[in-house]
Image 1 (cartoon, rainbow, N blue to C red):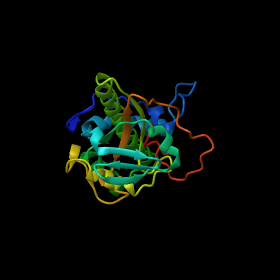
Image 2: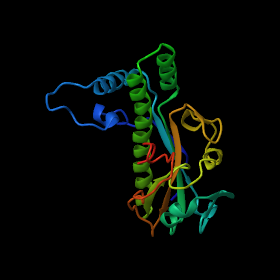
Image 3: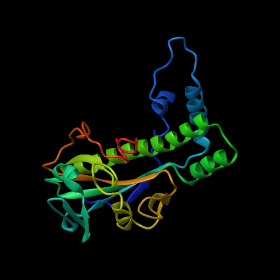
Image 4: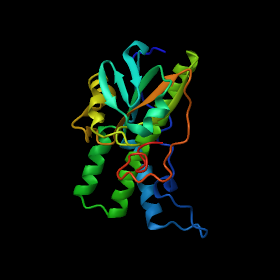
Length: 232
């Protein structure tokens, strides 16, 4: 499948509930906890503070070569590790995707920190930034699946550098394969980008691939982006 790089404002990235951030259930008494109240506050203000964008680039089959742990995209080599390797076997193409909450969210978070906002509020604000970026990535994945389906293909799980044993340093290399400032995102280093709440990853595409459960059970990798809520 072929597709020019495209970027959109996702339609439902803000459909988030307080318990999506806190991980808790509503109290039987119906009374809000302090954490739930903080989550509700940041969610209510978010529509005025975000510029959500998501998009993807489909790498042509002629520019993709996957041999064991090594994946080459446009001639650039990536060691995806032993966990990701079997999930990409059979992929004939790869889609790179990005998603972001936008620069305004960064400004909001910085202002709240400088103004001494309570820690529960800041915790929920940072959790919201991660969750919005994740929801926008969900949206991009659906668009990739549509392009793949038209070509008679399926997609794999999505993977991020920094998850499933794939080293974080490759994050910056992936950005080099995207158009400059695609969706308004700029890579600053292997560990940082602007806007801050932005992600980049990939999805394998092919006739002989499929989505499978992530092998997280028993994994002890510290700092994994999936376990931190950056990957779904």
